[in-house]
Amino acid sequence: MPKGLIDDGERPPETAVREAFEETGVRAVVDRKLGDVRYVYTWDGERIFKVVSFFLLRATGGRIGALPAGMEIEVAEARWVPLDDAPSLLSYGGEKQMARTAIEQLGEGSS
Image (cartoon, rainbow, N blue to C red; front, side, top):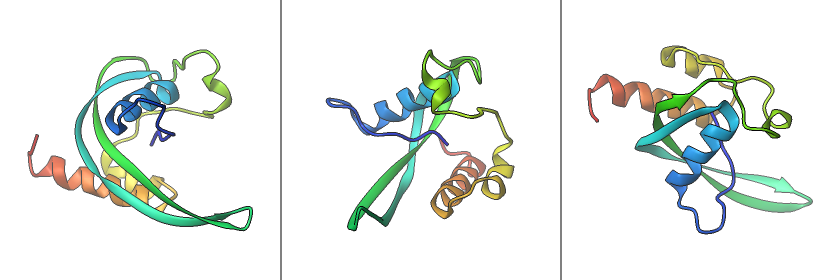
């Protein structure tokens, strides 16, 4: 699940589309916002409060794994997986929940 920092002048949905392309090679458009994950971590003795927004994207082009030049240092592997398998394959609780949310919303036939 691609993630990254919002660039100056960028809105969160634009960040999601950019990061998806940079980290997968796939061009996409935003379908909908899935939700936010909030958590706290410590960095250099300071507590950091973080919010990560997740968006469901629809692929429009590109090729999985055809990363833009220079991005191979950030990404070890990009691959498609069945959405139903995502909750068990992802490492973090928030990401697992966002995958379950996508499954639930797509199962409802909402668009």
